[in-house]
Length: 337
Image (cartoon, rainbow, N blue to C red; front, side, top):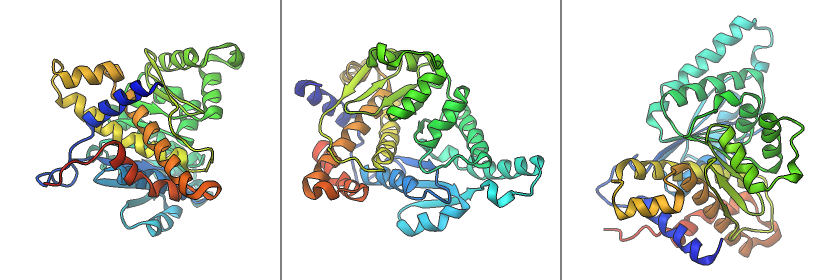
């Protein structure tokens, strides 16, 4: 991406990042939820949820397994934590019917909250427990019926790879695979004989997104590529040579709040205006493309800033600590009055 194009992208993102004003009330700047977290993995859902807050979401929730709730609550009082998911180890002697009742109960507890959110992140720290995933599949179907935007990361992607019908044709879904997750998804969609090395990566990504019904796919790599099956955009500016576990979770939470803002912009801006036309030229009128690029941009920028200070010892926590100043550098809040 050339610098001139980067300036255009940053300007277009600034146009849909909501301005701060003392007349606004809590919730107007976005409400995000993360569905993830099990006994083994408690950091990932925290990283995703707190990143959305640091970028500017008003409220951030985490729906996690009961065994993860207390741990995630202890990380930060800023998050609203719902330990409602249940795992198989808690119901080892239960019959298939009883397990289905457990999944339905957890699903019901989550379903009543879904209308309150602007975007749902599925997968950080989720794990692959069968009972837990059964509940999550129900939530994804309900979110689709409610037209709630989805960001699928980590084990949420694994679930979608096992059951592509969960997200097939849902244009409000954003998938964020790393190279290995991308390969598994391509193998599932095109078959194991698909020749990865003989295909242009941009065209492959476009074909994958199109085959999945024009969902948005953010393929993470040396340069992040974003496609909805119609267009492909690459973003490789900034970044850090230090690779840390959790950076993908930061991006997932970032994409979620940017998706909430971009979708609101598209819904509330008249199509004939200069602002809407500028957005359309830059992001092909797709809030998913806008969110994917914005999430990549802010994550890479913050990672660069963190590496500049901490070098080889950089961790995910230090990248998150740079999100606030990175947002202000790229998308200033503007006057306080």
